[in-house]
Length: 248
Length: 171
Image (cartoon, rainbow over all chains, first blue to last red; front, side, top):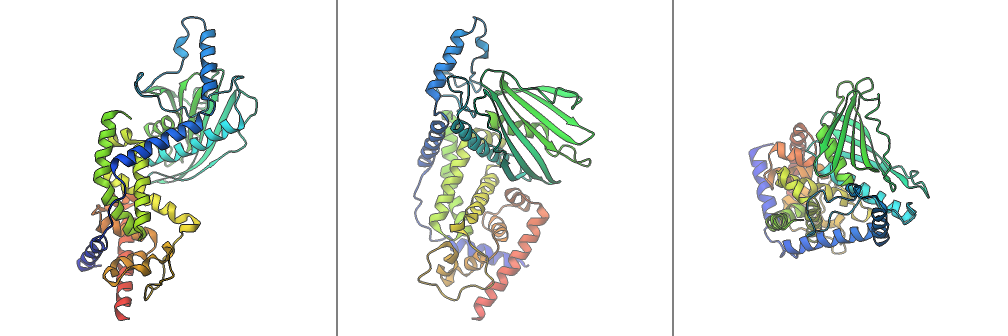
């Protein structure tokens, strides 16, 4: 390889784009398309949004005064000007359960979000594979789980991970493995704009785990299998960022 | 997205659309596909714009997204292209698919023709290094590989490129 080779490539590549056709789209059109796609995704996810509003309103009305704090929040502070981001998990039907279609739409959206979350991580970390456990759906149950198996590649190697999301239409929390004896210590920390996080590393069988709870009955967690040489292939911050993107 | 973020995104998209499309064209050899890739990449950037902008290093990052989008495009059966051992002698008037893109380019673009015959990773490495002028570290970040890997892909890509060019000159 010589400097002449490099110059030849530079000149050749610049020549190749010297006669380019006019650009068909502009920045405004791209932004408009992005907004339309976002609206479409919202529409797909919100198949029963109207029912949900009625259900949530009914629940709130039924609550004793002073319990409104559990109502859906506006974590990013848009106020009444901009609608909040779409919920990942479909709101339940009036009887507090989920239809197969609602479940499937959330599963597809969840997978997209997993991929996007990894793209936002620093260079050198990538998602080599993601697959979904399709046996999770529990018809007629207010509690649902979505599970994904991930293969993560970092500068230090290839690691397996599991990502789970959980929702309970009745607001019941799932048990925290992090807070049990599996992980000692289990560190609790705030996740700004989202909720609360828990982080633990198991030393005996290297594994790091982050849980993010948005509100009662809504949480996601990521379990990353490390090695004795590299027990925490991703930092707490990186793992939390992934979950915040999934469950936002 | 807030108004300020939206304005910043528009500025970014306006500044990057043309350079991105050029990079995409060098990778795929088809201006229409290059335009599609550019749009889909910018739309993906829009989805996470406030967070990405906070993180910085947008230039290398957007190229990383572009290269991935292009590689994904290549995995679709109807878009699949293959590296070839020898370059085609002359354009094939019946050829219309991306597989045949190299044959459409005239002799003036011999370097680009030779580039399109390289395996995708080598091609992407050379484009990012010598057209986008990314450093070895930035190219490694964009391709999600080590700097050593970028150096070896660059060396192999240049050697193969020179071989292709010498063969085409002999004919």
